[in-house]
Image (cartoon, rainbow, N blue to C red):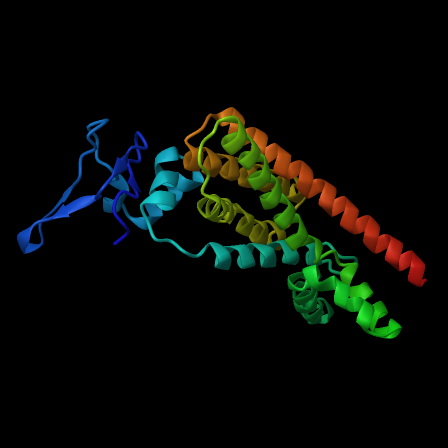
Length: 270
């Protein structure tokens, strides 16, 4: 059970001490909110599939249930999985990674080792300064791997989250003079990136509309990020959308800088 006074009504966002009351003989009754006179959390009776559908629809009540009234601590695991999905997407777009209709063609599938190596470098991307300690031939090999752009993925995610948190800190703390829970906000941002797993079926079942599908997935993820910020801060939609736009701008700039830096290093070594 979570600590006292940490539950929230999914309808009006008021604090509550309990979600349900447990009587003798296993009889449970849902707690009624004293502010809106509605059940504090109707989702405790719902099937997880229904909760997931409402979350996909970006319903505020579903987001409040997940972020405030559950002990769901899979945000870091989800973050790693989303990075894997993004790495797979970029690996599939590499030259020579096109799908073949010939079942005997296993060359494409042997490239999965390149994918695993790419994600390994991505996880160590922030320690790239260690590359200066190894010899030139090894550096060229790693630089070839970096051309797959796998290392950009964690840098982009870090830039997005950092920019959003910094912007909200400036606005909420210094302008609105309110408190800000960075850990809860970061957890909400990571959990709301769950839409990135949709890139897997979009890549596997590729067709002429794949670029459109990927763009819609990106829009869905940003919408979920905005809704998560709005739920955590109980703020206006304008503030959450502005924060997401700032994060997106920072993410795009970081990606461009990383690519130009990689190209410069490649030109230096050739």
